[in-house]
Each structure stands twice: as C-alpha cells, then as structure tokens.
Image (cartoon, rainbow, N blue to C red; front, side, top):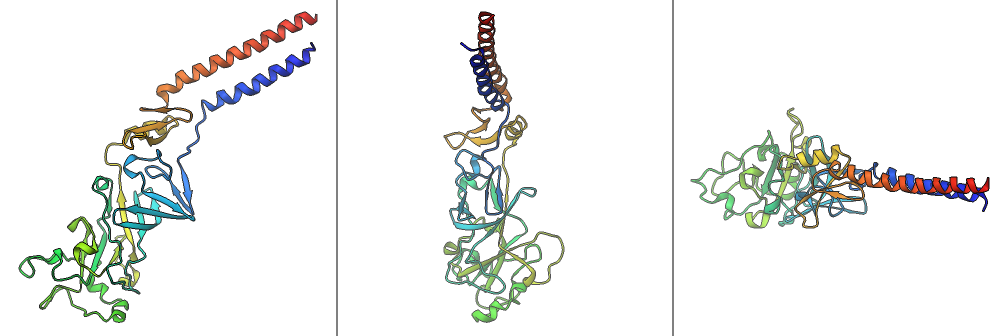
Length: 307
C-alpha cells in the first residue's frame, strides 16, 4: 500500500480527535436567549430546565413580544433590569393619566403562593384602586377603622385626580381628607398593605399603577411612569449558581422542577463543572492518546515495510 494512504488516515484521525478534546473544555451558554430586544438570562429562561426553579414557566416569547404570566394574568415585559433585579410590566387594562379603564378588566397583581418569596412589586410602586364598592375589604370597619389609603413615594390619589382622564369618565372627585358618607373614589396604597391586587375580590372597577425610579420629585401625574415595577430575588444564598458559572457552567434545574443543576455542556452536575470535568477530560485525552498512538504505530510500521 502507498504510504500516502496511511498519512491521510493519520490526519483524518487527528481531525476527529481535536474537536472532541476541545468540546470538553469549551462550554456555550445555551440558556441565554433573546425576545425582541430583551435579553433573557439567569434567573429567568425561556427553555424548560434553564434558570432558577423559582422562575420556571414564567416568561413566554410570542412574535418577539416577551410576556410574563402569573395567576392574576399575563403582562407584557417592557424591561428586565438585571443590575437592580427588577422587571417593568405593562397591563393593557391599566389606567393612566390619559385613560381610565373601568369594568374590572385589569389584571391587578397576584402571584402564586410558592412564588411570593421570589417576587413582589417594589416598595416605591403605588397601586391606585378606582371605584371600589363600600363593601370592599379595603373599607371594612369604615369610618371607625383607619383606611389603608396613603401616598407612596410621593404619588397618590390627590395628585392623580388632576389627570385629564377623570374629566372624561365623569366620576365624582372626592379628596382623601373628606369621605363624606362613602369611601373615596380612589384609594392609593403599597402592595405590602394588602399583599394582592385582585379587582374582583376588592370589588373595584379599575386600577392604576405607577413607580418611581429616582428620589427626585416628579412633575405631577403626567410625569409618572405607569406600569408595575416588580422586584425579584433568589431567596436563598445563591452560592450554587456562582460556583457553577465560575467553572464555566450554566445554572438550571432538574426534571423535578425543584433541584438546581449545573449544566456543563455534555453533562450535568449537582455541584459545579469542576467536580466531573477533570475526570471527563482525563478520559477524553486517554482515548485521544490511544487513537494517536495507534495511527502513529501504523505509520511507522508501514514506513518500515516500504524500506
């Protein structure tokens, strides 16, 4: 046989070995994804098994629009701020300064009990409940009991009444200082005051939500940022994920939807990639060395026969 045949065989084996060895040391984050212009990264994910288990089945991408789904409804995600660990959500039935939506159509905001440790509206997010019945749980014990209505981060109903939308709906403007014979037309409060914004249970016709991103005083309700600002966190100390990412892995969870996993390319680990990478790398290299030795031996043997 011509020695060139075995030279070609040697080069072919090397071409097969090198990618195997490289693949054991390079890991691409397959969990990071995009929806429109929004990056989805840990603790969120679009693929099952990626991200933190507390945030599974939460985000969905439809026609490049990122949606956030919880028990109270679906919201469009306007932004994910990873530095401040916050999401900005939009409810199409949310009242603003230009439009007041009635009929109990709004989602409000309520998460499943098991998600509560991981996310809630920020402390500087005000919810303004509109047209609530006198039978609403908000007003139980009124007028003897103190109402939960109050300003949040300088935003409240007194200012909101100045919006042009109130002129359009023709609702009676009632100041927060004098309720007369009934409850106020608008009641502003923080999420922490009642833990759930459910228009049906609260017997309210509509709601608005605004948030503050700076300590500066805003120029009236026309300058407010309307939407729901949600603070998220990984409740337990996230040393697991930091260790996983430090060793080139991607944080995810197992098939049970609870146990965290470190995804290391072609294998998963319950700790980090270094725990099995070294042994996997040794196995890969030993196989490569064996194939290389075999091909070199054949090449030398055929060279000797040619001579």
